[in-house]
Length: 485
Image 1 (cartoon, rainbow, N blue to C red):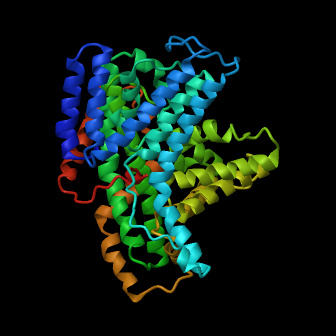
Image 2 (image 1 turned 60 degrees about the vertical axis):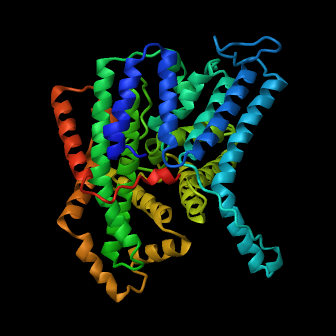
Image 3 (image 1 turned 45 degrees about the vertical axis):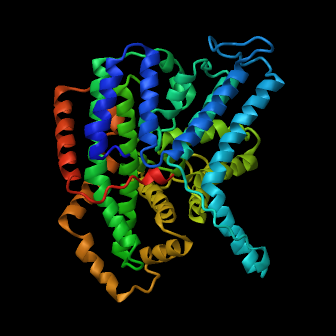
């Protein structure tokens, strides 16, 4: 089930809000929200629910074990002291949580990738007898990359003393399964909502801001991301394109993935506000960045901060000397690339960003870009990001190289490539593309624009929502990119 669908907008969401606000008491509301979230998640494949439920049980039990202080239980009434050594049982519980989550993610996301690469290697070595013939092909559960990271943060935060543990299973299950951010983020750390799960306010101001963010997110998705996605798909699927068309398609994909993903985050944060939760900002106008380092402070903030706090810093961060810092940066971004998908294209995408992060760190935060004016630094950063997006979007490594060759005039363009213009340069697609560019580089972020909801803003957002819903009824093209991650 996707947010930009008639089923969600006209049936699931009204039913959820009606049942949620008709019930009394935090426990009952959490139980209702949990059950409805399981229905939301299991709509595509009910078997996926069992996997998430199993992960939830494991982390809940590990959390209970971590909350024990020696022989005395700590029922989650306070945090573990940060300066006190952890017991062996607590360390074992944390290890079980991390290993089980990473094992689930590794098996379901990388089993097929591992088999394919193993077979390719043994075949190249002439060891055909060692090829692993298996009919098993693992289906990737929706959102597993998001909820495993989210659930794993619970045991880590409790172990570190950053948050109080949950003694009530329903409250914890609600945290893991909450439908707004379940399948495509943001990745909500337990420490960010731990106290909200125990007590939060439901105000008209929160609800109004939530509706406004939901409306804007829906508009960005339907009116900008979808037409830009059509541009990108047309060019990337053509196999050959002239230089201008190739750049048009690449920038179109940059607009699609930004407005698609930031729209989902806007809607998720808005839905959270409608339920009384305040989730952190996940995007901060990333294409305005003047370096790759700044880009990762603005893009998918919940993932970049998760990787920083749970991987980069535990690896040593920048505390172990320059060389180790560069290695840590590269390793974290390679892991981030693989987190997005089981493909060498994602590894290369991660390597590009990791390499540039290390390069910028070695040159100093200001010196490398200092020779360029502000707009030049923004343009240079965007081009680097754009090259990375080619690997992110193309179906395989060969197509990525061919597309880059088209972008830089190094490819033999097929005769039929000229026909792309008949589709690409229609006023509707070009207009949506130009508006998307203007908002991406000069617009105000949704999070900031909705800090105060005036009557004028409310009217504008509701008009945008009405237009989006009207267009939704006419669109056959309505994917959510990050559902596959």
